[in-house]
Image 1 (spheres, rainbow, N blue to C red):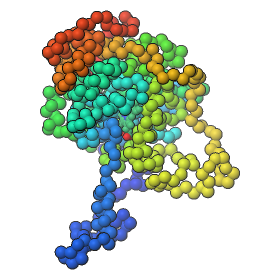
Image 2 (image 1 turned 180 degrees about the horizontal axis):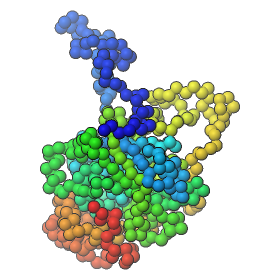
Image 3 (image 1 turned 60 degrees about the vertical axis):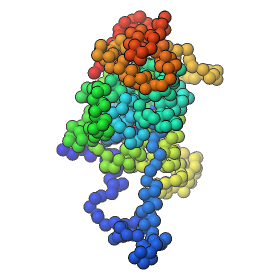
Image 4 (image 1 turned 90 degrees about the vertical axis):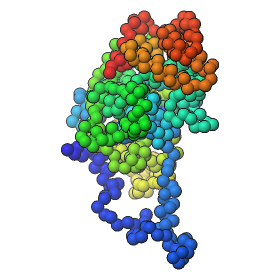
Length: 530
Ligand code: HEM
């Protein structure tokens, strides 16, 4: 059964090229009846410059490639709809979170992070889970991953981190795996990575299907209600099918048999009507509780354990339509953490602040200039009206005689109604290039993760460390990592050291700031739920 047509689907009709007309033309609309032979001077003569069709055809081919995403280059996308369970007016003024009768169109792109566009789907890696909500108030994006934490705390480290993750520069090896010296060198020197590295070595890093994968907004964001009151929020996507992984032996086989394994699974499921569903859940923290935790809410290397703040289910997204053209839609879609609607705002998480700069910046290059929001998949269903003008690939024909404000000629100032109001947070401080001490504990939640694992999951984690570190050439890098693993848990350090044939580091005092209650709970549901 065809899904009901939503506002985004109908909007795209204007850009669709139907299959029903089989005539061929040049880009200028001139009919072409021979695209097999170039225009030559004589049967065996040279090709003529004046063959505009051949020149156009070759030129267009020569220019088909655009830069792939600097990270998350390999991905697969789908359209869907989001339905709200209950109005959230006490928390946010966002219209799509207030009206349960509205079905908000969405586009989701799942991705791996490190590999290039043509790499295999089933590598051990983080997965992107980016969602664009085409709301009546404009586009809102949750640009998330399938892990709830990140490798670094401050976005200024992102270029260093990605340079360490990507293939080594001399031989471009390994193409899409963390089994190499530069990645582990970064880890051993930057222990804030450790919590995320535990997730990366777990089975969560080899999801069985995009349909069976969680998503997380990672950062603490902010909801703001109509009275201007803020509430901290963490976004979670929960797949209705449950969360399942491959195991490593399967990965080795699947990758050889079908490098498109996850992409194919998503496409085929949607084609046969087995539409993937994900519940959107939130963890909510009133501002008065901001400092009630033994970690900093602004630190993206930390989860909020669900014992402390349970999940609330607020709605469901159903992916019900495959894109019609991979390049036009999945490749050209542009997500951005700074795409927010009224009622949703940021926090001062320094990783988030950097992302709010970086996505637009990279898309200006990747998508060829400032008019990429006009590309059909990126275009809001809400009207767009402003004084931004010109630039490469401008598609809009502005009828206004002015493009400045205020003006007294064609309509003057923007109407001061329902505009986006930034949350009125009081900010003051001395300029300082330093990490807050509240970001200083890099071990407790890595330990919490290890403790929450079943014995067989621990075995898989140790095996993953052995596989990955087993490919590291430099002994001092392996030894540096082992010191950290022993601090996370002496058993982990000892088992990995034994497997690598290296002495287990002396454990000494395990560094931890966590409250005993938190450490002993051992089962943060966000980690252990499967
Ligand atoms: C791309 C997630 C951190 C820069 C992406 C994508 C996702 C994602 C899902 C793929 C989007 C798509 O499908 O098109 C995350 C998460 C992060 C994180 C969850 C941390 C919590 C960062 C940071 C930076 C960054 C700190 C830079 C300061 C980029 C860039 C792209 C990207 C440049 C490529 C975007 C494009 O070409 O369209 N990220 N990212 N990310 N990310 Fe991040």
